[in-house]
Image 1 (tube, helix red, strand yellow):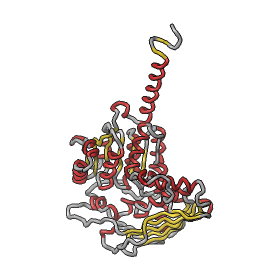
Image 2 (cartoon, rainbow, N blue to C red):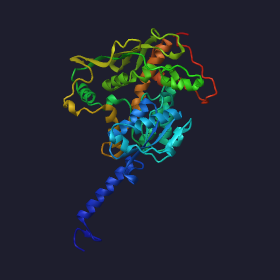
Image 3 (tube, rainbow, N blue to C red):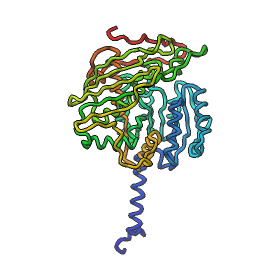
Image 4 (cartoon, rainbow, N blue to C red):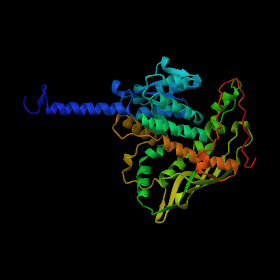
Length: 419
């Protein structure tokens, strides 16, 4: 037998076969079913505006994918989302939209039913209160995940998400979170420079989300208390976490990214200055003011509010010994390199699942950033300073344990520190 030839296989043939086997193993290790059908099959859980948008952006951000399943608590919301996606103007979305009637699920157990299908990726677009349970179940089912932020509404939920993220890593399941600034080129390039000392040592930051009122809905006569809490979800702390958690988490995430740390302490205040006692506004504050202390005595001033006027702005700013940065103002790449970060985050997820890019898991990251927001809320509600460890290890759990449309779900009074 001549050198380089064994059983009819040349060295070149052997090299090709070895490369193909390695590629196949890479795909198998990064995607549960991708190697079998050469296509990523996604399911949407939570068919409101954000979930519908995320599913659309997943299809816009990736080739060779399909949306094949949908699930929601309410049938009308699922059907509205299905119609909206099916009538999309972009042909890529229409061509990749493959949801059949038998792959549509509603009710309290809809999340279980969609996870029992053969989807590869779960797009989690439900409300914040339910994310810990859904993420845990998705990891147990072996699905890759895109999840919206925030990760949870209380410390108990945060610890559950951290455990799920760590389990996902063990199972090599990718997880991308909807903190889209992490996937936005001008933020990426600027913060890389800040870490390299572009403005010297960072001594302080301020992060703002000061805008107008979010949506609110009047209660319809046929809605139970629970249905109204969920449909009017931006009015109740246990459903969305209050505005500092649901929305301001974006800015606080940037502070953690820039400073490469979580805060050690927070002292906060807040209240209701603009919202009236109308039941439509629920039990939440309409403004928060927080002083976060990070390692090395770096302080971050955090302001967020929902008032009738949108003065104040939405931004992040870092103050260093040699300058100031808006955290997104030092991009070297040409503007045309910028991709919509709401689409880019889904491209990054798809590429990581396929092994084109390195493995990605943002679960602990988004859980920590959400916890930063939660500890600010806890401090404001109680009027007390809190350390990171006190907040993260708190037994606070505000999500109801029982789900039944016939049960009462009374609204708590607006929190008053010391009461």
